[in-house]
Image 1: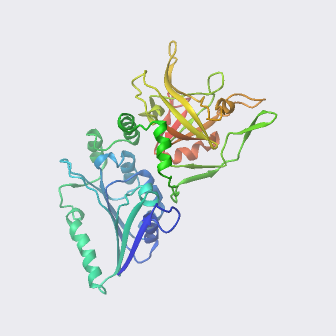
Image 2: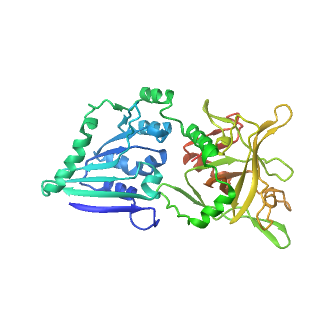
Image 3: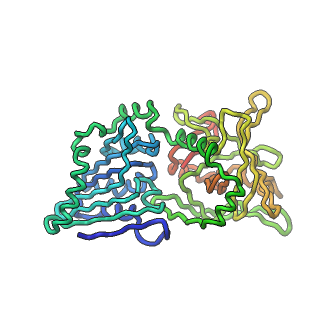
Length: 413
């Protein structure tokens, strides 16, 4: 019996993650079946395993997942992806609030068994980024009595679910998903994000002064990049704003992480070309989705609600950028961000946004990527509009503001 402790996240980039061991196991010739018993599943978790999992299936490997839907942590989009890929899945759920919460991954073959038991859900963060702990047990069959007994205990525990005899386990189908969505057990990712924003606004909003105190008390842990994470090198551009000053408007490297939103700018408005319109709702192929305003901690139904956000761009922290409702004349009523923040040293975000010496404003005809850092602080990246297709590809939800032909695109990751 081989025992391996997999600790991840405390020192990112050092040692294997749970996801790494799963990917290696799919490629191991001796395994012919894979079962996962997991509480939460995300699109990012599936896509980071999908290539290797599909190769495993093509070579004759059998795959079945037993997925939980408690606490709104498994999204509608993740379950749709499992069905689209033809991955056999059972939903495990109890209407009387008995939570299904395991993280167990089991491989079987003629000669070897392997079981991973730990804290990693089938999400990109759980498998590759968060501070998690997993024990991997590999047993050579019929040569290790203690190991065989351990594997048998795992299967004895889950056999009623595996055999379809437990009332809490039902095969995932479009009809079952409709029931789960209609009863708010499973939410679309956009709706769940809006719910979390509302909770954050009511209970967890951290004042900027507290942010500073927390950052003094705790150091940040750098996130590792999942194998199928998006990483793209962008050419650095500069806007000359005076004889002695140049302002960088693009970072050299863009990496999309979870809890981000991107939005196509096209022509910005305002005298300094610094007003970015947001939307309450969006559409894709006739289906309504949450608008871009849902990413920020405001109530889209309350025009009096407002929030000031800090934006970290190019190593500078631009404070006090209002997200607010504009109540203009006739149809000119909408949510927007005023990109007008100023750093403690007096650097203005409008230096980048306004037209300068023949250059159009730094936000015009670009894509802005917002990533939540903490509380009301966000990282802002400026991407070229040519990156829009790869952004769509790596989004869990995306759509258009207004008309699907002429409206501006936006998406959530």
